[in-house]
Length: 273
Image (tube, rainbow, N blue to C red; front, side):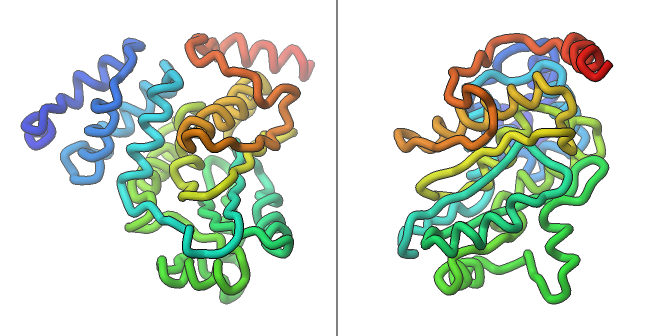
């Protein structure tokens, strides 16, 4: 705590500000993530911050700042030396994890390069990495040289976060799973985008049916639009094609609209009834 205060970041005050619905600046968010990595921001403080974000949300600028800060907590890989267009796919979360496992080799067979960083289970189901590790001999803990070598050799690789790649996300991902903060649109958004290293294009998938971490339809649609919008922002002027299944995936998202989760749940129950 003392180290965080000496660096100019008063963590309890920042949590209180977000709990009260204040907008945080880019520097606030970056210092929070930096402190999380150097130990001056504790796990329980980050858990409290995640809960504040769960209830109050983040606007577009905050979500982008969070994404970039998480990305920069580790190494950022550049795949320019590998021939071929680089693509990636991320989603708002499903149960079966059926798309990534088959899509990566299919796309690679078409001549594209797919450097994919997948996640582990959240909530009641295992994630893509957990399912892949059930295959005897399949490794998801490739080193960076092994990662690059496999991309050159077969055109795709599925790995997990490491101590070098997205370390802040790996820690926050685990905290969200045990603190009831999985269903947070800004945190759902930053998680796949900060993992997406420097590629040419990125596809976002909105899950139909009952996804593992976003149960209400209005929240699923919001997550799909958030993923698409923030992806464009973090990629600069380069575009992204969204395959999220929404009727208007390119529609500007109203980031400022306050969330009313009780109304969303009531609407969901009415439709199911």
